[in-house]
Amino acid sequence: MSVKIWVDADAAPVEVKQIVFRAAQRLQLETLLVANQPLDTPRNVPLVRSILVREGADVADRYIVEHSTAGDLAITADLPLAGDLVAKGIFVIDPRGDEYSPNTIATRLSMRNFMDSLRGEGMVVGGGAPYSDTDKKAFAATFDRLLTKAIRKRQRQADRDSASQ
Image 1 (cartoon, rainbow, N blue to C red):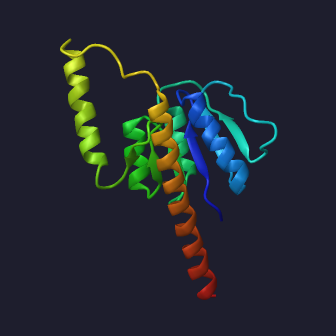
Image 2: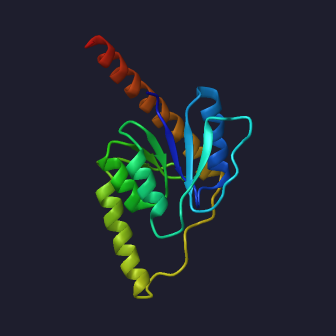
Image 3: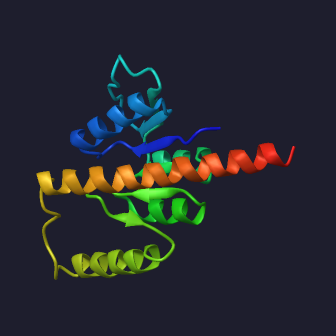
């Protein structure tokens, strides 16, 4: 079983998808874009496909959590989804190149909840900065590192499984 790449695709920047598509083609990895709206996938990369889920809060998130397996790689900016995936043993990265891990996810979720409460009280307004070339480069570097790590982990597991038979 090879590594699958999961993309929480409703809000993933085009640049992120392009990087992922190139890696999927180069490494022949199944890549799944999960969204509640139809998405285009590259015709020349048959292992990349779009999964359309019904509309509703967190439907795409639940699909990814239910269908991914430990050792897969996921891309999302959704911190609660990232927390669920990290707990399941999935490698997780956000579109700006930040890795979510067991060591960082609790702090990230706590900060998110704190900022949500400040926004709710009107103390913080506005959103995040626009996606930049720096973000794209950071994503590409972290994506490459985590994808290599995921592939090696899956290969070691396959080697152990075949040795025990």
